[in-house]
Image 1 (spheres, protein in one colour):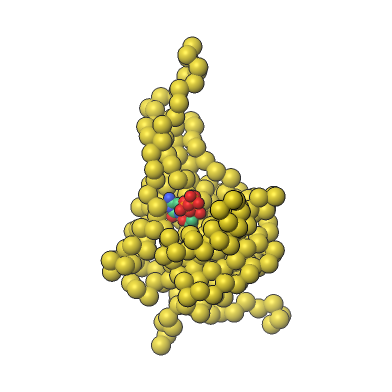
Image 2: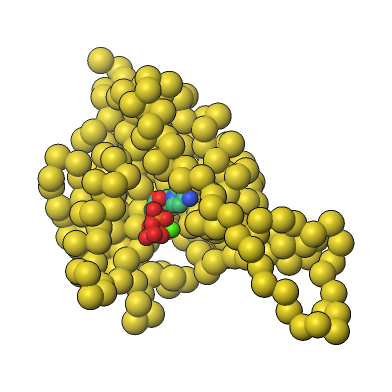
Length: 237
Ligand code: CTP
Ligand code: CA
């Protein structure tokens, strides 16, 4: 019924979304990972496809039981692999959304064989810094390798601390990343990770700040896409 019909306003728009968590191997059987469920990125991919977009979803580890209908899916495991896939595809997208939970660090070396307990107890794990994929995409756009019209969207899961509240951290991250939009989720107290509902703000580089009330990730996806739709140049003229 028409009251529940989704707008068909992203027809022909090419959307590239990353979702889920990266896994950084330690040895052939172990990795450093995170608790990302992939739900928000999958909801965005699904909703964008329903609104007529041509969607590519680059997915890491998720709790999702299946692939969203009508979406091209690319599987990755590590942040390095995710960087390769996003960098390869971003220039052919109208909208790039980094909803993936990217490990900031990876083990400096990956053991060829399973690490044994041994007699000396645990050895420390040395870490190296992963590339900041989102920052790299914004830099590529500045350099002209990605069209200037490409809309770039980031996510941030924040808690307040002694330096400021969730919104303060979000504003600072928007400036630092240089994206067009930043979806800021308030986390802690059981919010966001692995749960069906989100709450937060949608911050834009033009200074608009929209509160996102506690809502399902599906509803939040449609609110985020509403904002994105206002930023995408009209492809049909
Ligand atoms: N991100 C990325 N590459 C990374 C880390 C993060 O592309 N190596 C992206 C995430 O997908 C997200 C955004 O950057 O869209 C913000 O991630 P977040 O972890 O909040 O930002 P960081 O810059 O890593 O800052 P923090 O120190 O708060 O973790
Ligand atoms: Ca981080």
